[in-house]
Image (cartoon, rainbow, N blue to C red; front, side, top):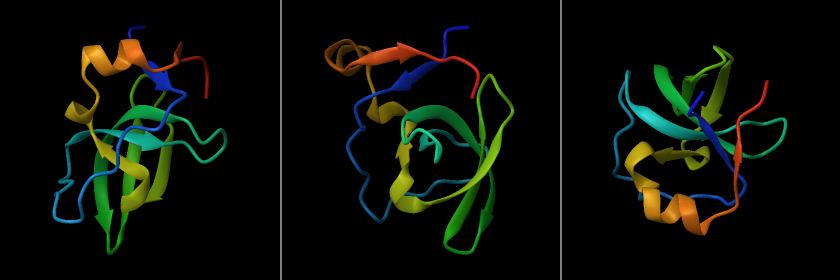
Length: 88
């Protein structure tokens, strides 16, 4: 599995960015507060339902806990403390 969990938080996105259904994102997992790759599966008012890639876990999350997938480049991954994903 090539999925990653970020120990360092990716930079926040500005409020105008749209996280549409089907968008690949980094979402903060509530239990460990790390960011994992996910896909937006539903918008629920001011919240988003995401499914974590590789695990299938779903979680409702706020905009401030989402980051665009392209906000993390290969260079920034190498600069951050990144740990391989394990079962969530």
